[in-house]
Image (tube, rainbow, N blue to C red; front, side, top):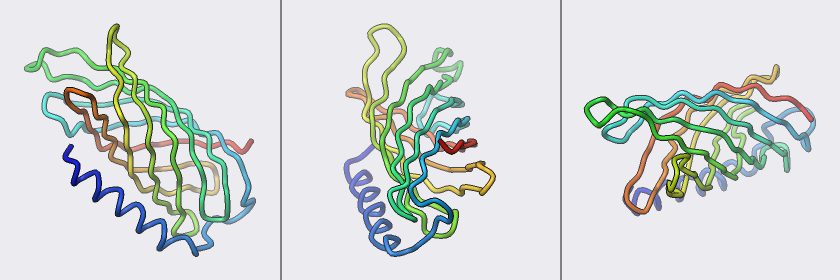
Length: 169
């Protein structure tokens, strides 16, 4: 991914943070902690890959009525097309980020972290993942995000749908 795209994505996230910082969005306990279990289904944006699927655990801590910190870890599998040798690439993402609620239950999210390849001798990637989502009162959380994994010698990206359920701790 080009550096200019990363800078643009960071600038958009910063602007969204400043614009939405005065919105009182979440209802209920503004200092709640939640644990979410999610399923991720994605379409790779990188040539040679056909499908991505994974799961994650996400810890969310509310800092105010409209800003929450998130910490997540999981597993993603990127399936290679047969014409590129078949098989799959496994990645363990560990990310930290924030959710900024711009309406009662709708949010922007941004995460940064590291992705560890599961194959022996695999490399580590820098991860970045901007997204948007909606958290329902019953604990269901639906999100759509782009997730980029930048390795020394290449990258893998995906547009993913996250379907999750969150429990209050």
